[in-house]
Length: 465
Image 1: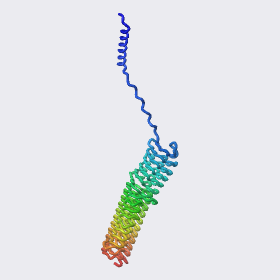
Image 2: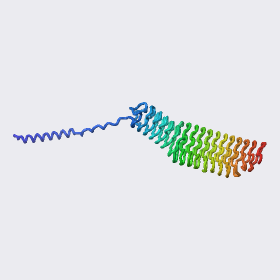
Image 3: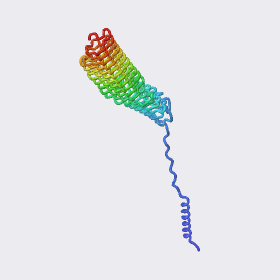
Image 4: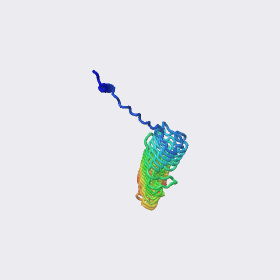
C-alpha cells in the first residue's frame, strides 16, 4: 500500500512526538541552577575620612587585634601616631575623637570592648586602655583632659555619659577593678574642671568597689554652675589619695548632695568637700556609711555650707578615725548645722572637730558611744556662737586630751557615762556629763552642768564647777 508524502510526514511527526514523550518521562528536565549569591563585602575595619593619619591601615596611628571586622572609627579621629594602636577586636570610636597622644591606645584590648562617642578622649592618655579586659562606654564630649578616663572599665564595666569627666584625672581608673566585681559610673548633665564654668545639674552614680586610684572620681557629680550637684557612691569606694574629692559639691550656687556607702573614703583627703555647698547658695548634704572616712583628713568639710543655707552630715559607725577626719563635717558657717556620727568614731587627733558647728544659727551634733577619744577630738562639735547649740555624745567618749571642749555650749548638751576622762576634756559650760566621768587633769573645768557620780578624782579636776 502506497502512502502519500503527506501521510508519511504525518506518521513521522507522530512517531517523533511519541519518542519525545517517552524520553521526557524517562529523563525529566530540571530547572536551571540558580546563580551564585553576590560576593560579600570583604572583612576588615571601617575607617572614616581623614582618620588614622589618612593612610592605609593598620599603621602607626591605628592597629588592632584580629582582622578588624568589628572596628569602627569615625571621621577626623585617631590622627596622632600611637593614638589608636593595639585596640581590641570590638571597638567603636566616633567622630573627632582620640586625637591625643596615646589617647585610646589599648582600648577594649584583651577581650574587652570600648565604645567612644564624638568629640571625646582627646587628651594625652585620656582613654588609654579603657575597657581592657572589661567594658567601657563613653559618651560625647567627655574625657578630654590628661588621663581623664585612663583605664576606666579595666576588668570592670563603666558607663560614662555626655559632657563628663573633665579635669586632669577626673575619672582616672573609674571602674578599674582589682577584685573582679562590677562597677559603673553614669555621669549626666554638666560638670566642670577647676578652670571652667558650667551650669545646670550634675549627677554621678558610682558602683561598689570603684574609684580606688589616686584622684579617682574627683569632682564626680560636681556642679560649677547654679544647679544641683549629686553623687551616689557605693560601698568600698574612694579609698586612695584624694579619691572622690569634691564629689557632689556645688561650687557657685545650688545644693550639694553626696551619698557614700560603707567602707569608703579611707584614703588621704578622700571625699573632702563631698556634698558641700561651698562658695555657693544652697544646702550641703553628705550621708556616709559605716567604717568610712578613716584616711588622713578624710571627709573634711563633708556636707558643709558657708552661706545661709543648712549644712548636714550623717556618718556611720566606726568612721572618721584618722587625723582631722570629718573635720567641719556638717558645718554651717551662718546657717543651721547638723552632724550625726555613729559609734566608735572620731578617735584621732582633731577628728570631728567643729562637726555640726554654726557661727550664727542652731547647731546640732550627735555622736555615738566610744567616740571622740583622740587629742582635741570633737572640739566644738555642735557649737553655736550665738544660737541654740545641742551636742549629744554617747558613753565612753571624749577621753582624749582636750577632747570635746566647747562641744554643745548649751544646757541641752549631754555627754554619756565613762566620758571626759582625758586631760582638760569637756571644758564647756552647762553640759550634762554622765557617771564615771571627768577623771583626769582639769577635766570638765568650767562646767556648771550636772555631772554624774565617780568624778573629780584627780587634782585640779572639775575646777570652777
